Image (cartoon, rainbow, N blue to C red; front, side):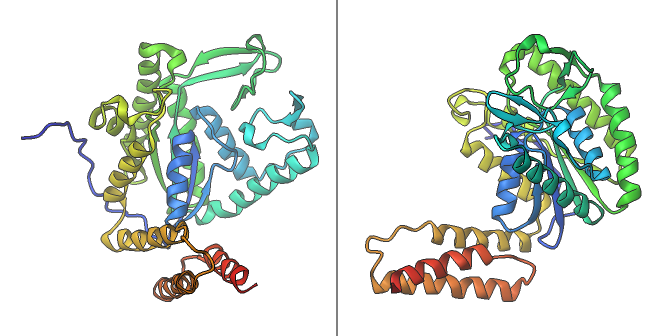
Length: 332
């Protein structure tokens, strides 16, 4: 007897491996999955503009990455004691404009260099609502808590999204013909739109992605993270206290379903080995000065060396440095 509705996800023929190069852009859900991929030692560039919510801002950011746009002071504005960019998430805000510009331009240049070599571009749409600056008609990626009367709020249409992304995918394919585009819709509820408004917003995103799949059958893939959380995990225990964001347990489950769909058994084995190393490094000994703990750290280094020997494309430099730092502190 089955006591839940399970979302049917096919195992995709083009599977993601550790030799692939990935870029993720979009909502905080993209950030969560991106961090999980990074922890599992995949080569990822996660949100080079910070968290983005609407398809227009994601597309505009990708266009700037393609052009390798370099920001200047004229692209920033000062608000609440920090310099900010309407194209970037608040995580880039800084009271030093030069430092902020260095950070922004470094991330764009880094992403620009990787575009021709990407195997997968993972895009997560959060909402179809956008905010436009009244003074110049620019759709912003983040309002930065500016007064509401600074913006006009409108909703993108399916046709607008499809037109923009058809052109974008065609141009990206000229640059990198082998890149696959993996779309998903964030399961995070935008409560301020109301229950019905949120559903309408998500429906627009889903319909647009379906149309893109029809146009680019061999290059566009959809992963149903939205459906998994709403249909398989239809219980408030799978949400954080705000009742809008999926809980860590829900994210872990979506990650498992993602793994089943896009990772081979060998890749999943590698991930488990990486997770074991991470878990070992989080271990807190009863006595840090003990011989047993020293031996434990040396054993981690040996495990890392063994994994690197088997899989040379994995990077464990930070973990090895952490082990050596701990060992040196014990010797001193």
